[in-house]
Amino acid sequence: MGRRPAPAMGAGTSPLEWAVAALGAALLVAAVGYLGWHGWTREAGPPDLTIEEVSRGTGQGGHRVAVRVRNVGREAAAQAVIGGELMEEGGQVAEDAETILDYVAIGSSREAWLVFTEDPAGYALRLRVKGMARP
Image 1 (cartoon, one colour):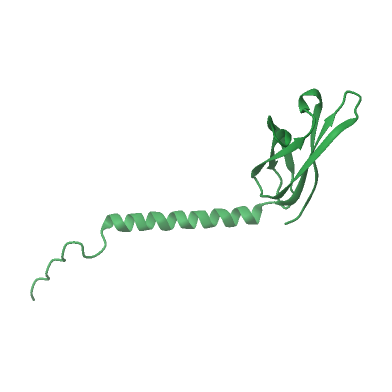
Image 2 (cartoon, rainbow, N blue to C red):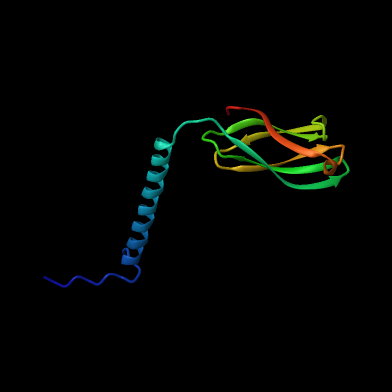
Protein backbone atom coordinates (compact mmCIF):
# COMPACT_ATOMS: atom_id res chain seq x y z
CA MET A 1 0.00 0.00 0.00
CA GLY A 2 1.14 3.45 -0.79
CA ARG A 3 1.26 6.47 1.35
CA ARG A 4 -1.62 8.89 1.34
CA PRO A 5 -0.81 12.30 -0.01
CA ALA A 6 -0.80 15.08 2.59
CA PRO A 7 -3.80 17.39 2.42
CA ALA A 8 -3.23 20.66 0.62
CA MET A 9 -2.91 23.81 2.70
CA GLY A 10 -6.34 25.29 3.50
CA ALA A 11 -8.19 22.02 2.90
CA GLY A 12 -10.46 20.68 5.66
CA THR A 13 -11.58 22.32 8.86
CA SER A 14 -9.05 23.39 11.45
CA PRO A 15 -9.48 22.68 15.17
CA LEU A 16 -9.89 26.42 15.78
CA GLU A 17 -12.82 26.57 13.36
CA TRP A 18 -14.45 23.60 15.11
CA ALA A 19 -13.98 25.30 18.50
CA VAL A 20 -15.54 28.56 17.28
CA ALA A 21 -18.46 26.64 15.72
CA ALA A 22 -19.01 24.72 18.97
CA LEU A 23 -18.92 27.95 20.99
CA GLY A 24 -21.46 29.58 18.63
CA ALA A 25 -23.78 26.56 18.86
CA ALA A 26 -23.52 26.56 22.67
CA LEU A 27 -24.39 30.27 22.82
CA LEU A 28 -27.35 29.78 20.51
CA VAL A 29 -28.71 26.89 22.58
CA ALA A 30 -28.23 28.90 25.79
CA ALA A 31 -30.03 31.97 24.38
CA VAL A 32 -32.98 29.95 23.08
CA GLY A 33 -33.16 28.04 26.35
CA TYR A 34 -33.15 31.21 28.43
CA LEU A 35 -35.85 32.88 26.34
CA GLY A 36 -38.01 29.76 26.53
CA TRP A 37 -37.54 29.46 30.29
CA HIS A 38 -38.23 33.17 30.82
CA GLY A 39 -41.42 33.04 28.74
CA TRP A 40 -42.62 29.87 30.43
CA THR A 41 -42.01 30.91 34.04
CA ARG A 42 -42.97 34.60 33.82
CA GLU A 43 -46.14 35.33 35.74
CA ALA A 44 -48.92 37.07 33.88
CA GLY A 45 -50.00 40.51 35.00
CA PRO A 46 -51.01 43.93 33.75
CA PRO A 47 -48.71 46.73 32.65
CA ASP A 48 -47.51 49.02 35.43
CA LEU A 49 -46.38 52.43 34.24
CA THR A 50 -44.37 54.85 36.36
CA ILE A 51 -43.73 58.47 35.44
CA GLU A 52 -40.88 60.77 36.41
CA GLU A 53 -40.07 64.30 35.40
CA VAL A 54 -36.85 64.61 33.41
CA SER A 55 -36.53 68.30 32.55
CA ARG A 56 -38.34 71.55 31.80
CA GLY A 57 -37.95 74.02 28.96
CA THR A 58 -39.65 76.79 27.07
CA GLY A 59 -40.30 76.96 23.35
CA GLN A 60 -42.52 78.60 20.76
CA GLY A 61 -45.43 76.30 21.67
CA GLY A 62 -45.28 76.93 25.40
CA HIS A 63 -43.64 75.44 28.47
CA ARG A 64 -42.49 71.83 28.01
CA VAL A 65 -42.10 69.26 30.74
CA ALA A 66 -40.18 66.16 29.63
CA VAL A 67 -41.27 62.95 31.35
CA ARG A 68 -39.94 59.40 31.31
CA VAL A 69 -42.51 56.61 31.40
CA ARG A 70 -41.29 53.15 32.48
CA ASN A 71 -43.21 49.90 32.22
CA VAL A 72 -42.31 47.83 35.29
CA GLY A 73 -45.29 45.53 34.78
CA ARG A 74 -45.58 42.10 33.18
CA GLU A 75 -47.39 43.10 29.98
CA ALA A 76 -46.90 45.74 27.30
CA ALA A 77 -49.10 48.83 27.24
CA ALA A 78 -50.61 50.47 24.17
CA GLN A 79 -52.20 53.89 23.73
CA ALA A 80 -51.02 55.00 27.18
CA VAL A 81 -52.47 58.41 28.05
CA ILE A 82 -50.05 60.36 30.22
CA GLY A 83 -51.40 63.45 31.97
CA GLY A 84 -49.97 66.34 33.89
CA GLU A 85 -51.77 68.91 36.00
CA LEU A 86 -50.53 72.24 37.33
CA MET A 87 -51.99 72.49 40.82
CA GLU A 88 -52.62 75.74 42.70
CA GLU A 89 -52.06 75.96 46.46
CA GLY A 90 -55.73 75.35 47.23
CA GLY A 91 -55.74 72.09 45.25
CA GLN A 92 -57.44 73.56 42.19
CA VAL A 93 -56.19 72.52 38.75
CA ALA A 94 -54.85 75.59 36.94
CA GLU A 95 -54.05 73.75 33.70
CA ASP A 96 -53.76 70.22 32.41
CA ALA A 97 -51.94 68.61 29.50
CA GLU A 98 -51.70 65.10 28.15
CA THR A 99 -49.89 63.01 25.58
CA ILE A 100 -50.35 59.50 24.21
CA LEU A 101 -47.63 56.88 23.91
CA ASP A 102 -48.44 54.36 21.19
CA TYR A 103 -46.57 51.45 22.82
CA VAL A 104 -44.53 50.85 25.96
CA ALA A 105 -42.88 47.41 25.99
CA ILE A 106 -42.24 45.34 29.11
CA GLY A 107 -39.16 46.61 30.94
CA SER A 108 -38.70 49.60 28.63
CA SER A 109 -38.98 53.35 29.02
CA ARG A 110 -40.19 56.09 26.70
CA GLU A 111 -39.84 59.86 26.86
CA ALA A 112 -42.62 62.31 26.11
CA TRP A 113 -43.36 65.99 26.60
CA LEU A 114 -46.31 67.72 28.20
CA VAL A 115 -46.89 71.27 26.95
CA PHE A 116 -48.48 73.97 29.12
CA THR A 117 -49.31 77.61 28.38
CA GLU A 118 -48.62 78.53 32.03
CA ASP A 119 -45.11 78.28 33.48
CA PRO A 120 -45.01 75.11 35.64
CA ALA A 121 -42.50 76.76 37.98
CA GLY A 122 -45.31 78.56 39.84
CA TYR A 123 -47.35 75.40 40.46
CA ALA A 124 -47.12 71.92 41.88
CA LEU A 125 -46.95 69.40 39.03
CA ARG A 126 -48.99 66.22 39.35
CA LEU A 127 -48.22 63.45 36.84
CA ARG A 128 -50.38 60.40 36.29
CA VAL A 129 -51.35 57.66 33.87
CA LYS A 130 -54.92 58.31 32.72
CA GLY A 131 -55.43 55.06 30.84
CA MET A 132 -53.95 52.42 28.55
CA ALA A 133 -54.96 49.46 26.40
CA ARG A 134 -53.74 45.95 25.72
CA PRO A 135 -51.77 45.82 22.45
